[in-house]
Image (cartoon, rainbow, N blue to C red):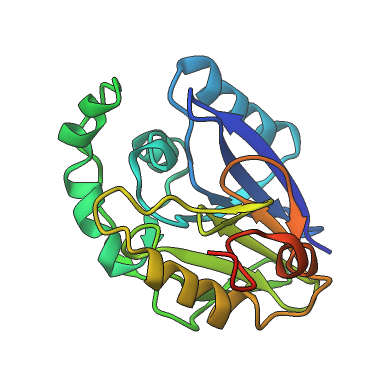
Length: 215
C-alpha cells in the first residue's frame, strides 16, 4: 500500500509529495524546497524512513514547484522526469525566478520525458501519467488507479482550479483537461493538489464553482 507524505515548502506553500511503500522505494513529486532547512526536512524524512528514492517527478515546472530540483538531483542521484512541454520553464528558471524573488541556479534539465498514459513504477506501485495542460504547458497528474488517488498539481484544487493568467495558461484548455482526464475518474478518488488540502473527485464534481457550467 502506498503511503503519502506531504511536505509544504517555500513562500508559495507548495505540497511536495513523497510516495512510498513497504519495499522502501519512493518517488518525490515536485521538489519545492528552497531554504536550507527545507532541504534538510526533505532529506531528513527520507533518511528517517530509510527510503530509496527512485524517481523525481514534476506535475509541472512553474518555478515554485521546482526550486529544489538541483538539490534533489544531487542529494538522491536522480534525474527529473516531466512532460517535454515543461522544458521551457526549466531552462528559463534562473531568469523567471527573479520575477518572484528567488535566486535560482541554472537547473539541471531532464534527459527523458513522460508521455500521456505512461506508467511510472516504484516498489509494488504503479502511477499513470495524465497529460492535463491549461494551467501550464506540460502539466501532468499522476493517477494510482488501484488505490484511488491522484496527485493533481495545480490543475484542480479543493473548490477551485489552477490559474491561467501565467505564460502558456489557457482557461478553456484547462477546463477540457479537467473534464476529460479528472472528471472521468470515480467519485471516491482522492485528489492531492499542489497547494492546500486534499479533496475528492466527487466533491469537486458536485461543488466546484468552476465546473458544472459555473464558469
